[in-house]
Amino acid sequence: MKNYLITVFTVCSFFLSACSSGEDSQLKESELTIEQKEFIALLKSNYPTQVVSFNAETAIENAPYTSNQKLTLTFSSSGMLFIDTNPEKNDGDEIELPVFSINGNEYIWKDIEHDLTYALSLTAENYINEINVFKTSTNTFYASLVTVAINENPSETNTESYYFFGDDNMECTPISQGKPLVSTVHIISNPCQSSSAALTFYFDLMKVINAGTYTVLASEGINVVPGAGKLTMVFYSHDAKNWFAQSGTVTVTTNSDDASKIDLKFKDILMKAEDGTETTFTGQIIGV
Image (cartoon, rainbow, N blue to C red; front, side):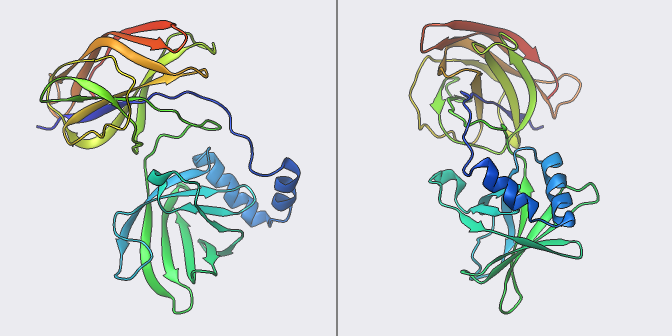
């Protein structure tokens, strides 16, 4: 029987300014062919932020990417492709490929400096199937990049305070480490108001965690990395304030109808903002 790790995410939202002017963006978009514009429209419809997380599923020896390497690709409306080969470093260092071409069912970007070709294919539902990476000069296959689920927030940058609960001592402290996640439920204190705080529940699939009652410990520390078997909870903020959990409990039990699922009950989770504002959450999610 497996119980799955549940993750909850906290974010302070504020808007990013565009990297280039609107006039430059419109000019570049106007130079695209109809087919290129149709492809970008498909990407926007299925990936609204135009930012997609990838994993190097296969890679041969001496390839530029190693097996299981994580990458983040940003598909610009102008047709540019930005490749972040080390997203966890978060240093803004990216490979920039300015143009792409279409060859049958493949959408191709070429990195002339590194002698690489990136060939993207779509599924029947117009989602990204994979990106195959080749050495351009010899057409040698290097790696296959496949998409992974990730938490995406359009037009926002994330300030995160994670709280993890260990099965051993049933306690938690904050961490700061991004993970590929899939949102399930969003619970908000003051809908449509900038002063709202919220809990949002996510899955990090196929990670075992023990049932039990976990107590939240008040803290504002960061950089504590969770190990295997930890339950992680994070809190959203819809304003410019940082929110921190002060107290409360989270109880994890095996679902009575399906032993592969868990029930998660959270009680009196007290969140406090930098300005002293407090919000309390109590509730449950059954069968996840």
